[in-house]
Length: 315
Length: 305
Image (cartoon, rainbow over all chains, first blue to last red; front, side, top):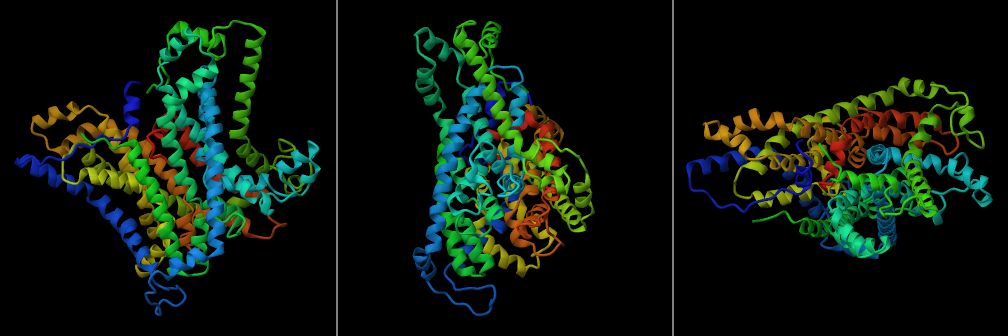
């Protein structure tokens, strides 16, 4: 990688130019070569994403069960009607919304505090930034196990510390098992895992704000607090929006963490866990596929918003 | 490879003197208080990010008796490698470790080979459908796996790919390949076009220009991208949980999550933490080696969240 100036450019999405067919021989050759080079990727995308997606869509109109693969029929939109009346689905949807809203909100606020802190110059700043890659690099399953262990009712460090501090009601308290704190526990794990990522995204946004903007407002006598709301926040808005929608998409589909920490338990069940239970544990491929189609549509809408926002540039 | 903002020397001195608080104040009591608060804040950030994994390491080094003792100490009183011995003697875990290594390495190689070619086409060639394709690739990096597992389950059984290593490799390409293409296309596009223009004018073909001029320059980017794809494949859980049933294709993530499945009271906590550490260390080593590039690449938006 070359100089520092190119860095932001490299992070920006590729500029895509609209095609105007060059009627030359070289143009035709380039067209053929282009298609040859993207062909393997196209095959993968079609074979492992688009075709299964269409198949999911088709299955969602059937009463297919993996336990009796030979006897099934198309039942129209029955599955979708059933989902609307399914109380477990309602619970899982509510859990997902609570999970997404609280973890994204906490990650953003904490991420902002961390980003502002490490944005300033101090000795060892590089080491702190590197340490933030640790939660990000740890596999989600491992993070869930680490926190399950810390949250352990009997031997967990968290209850031990709380009791030491005088909160004796946490003696043997089962964080993940107790329905009142189960969702909170998984949110904690997600916040731990993702705050550093959020902070680094926001830090990148902070670093492109030119220092002289602050300089001139300082001359005008603005306080730090005013500078934050009048300069930092407006200029950071694009980076913040991208990070927010990106995190919302990821949280909305949460599966690993919840499944590892609490299985199919309804106290923490997300829509993805609900879909997985229907598809795999209950083997209701038709009904489960309808749930996954609903999840797909929700995520797809967010993806459209996201790609709009980062604008794959067209000239 | 610089990532710092440009700051004048005087500005830097001032920032150092004030601990980055930014105001022009010198050593007033308030400034000292601010500096102390700042150090505490940094300490809290470090504690928050590093403690859980530190605790896993400490727990993995404790004896079975010590780990269930009330008032746990912050370091092992009688450090032992017994838990690690148990992990490495566990044939099922070792098998899973080997499976994961084979799967992740294959995914990385295939993604880099096909991804480089596709990324070059996206960045440098003009052909019909390129804009649409770029959007498709970007969307694919955010594709929710849960939307297709039911259908993939039936398809994989039809092709005898269920519970096989090669089946998982192909499924993993669905996220690794679009990711690789997206990041490398960014990378190629950032290289000045005149680089290979001279060669093209001299009559070299596009493929020769790619191989002899762009590719050598792209090696650092490919290493980082490959490492990120490796992390993704190594850490993947949903597909591995859904499409494997026996030890034949079980990955490490399944192996360590199954450690929890036993009874509530007789779980070997120390061994489980040792297994968690073993699974994580290779990733942390890799990340530390290319950490600067990862931080830069993160902000490309396509890195896992």
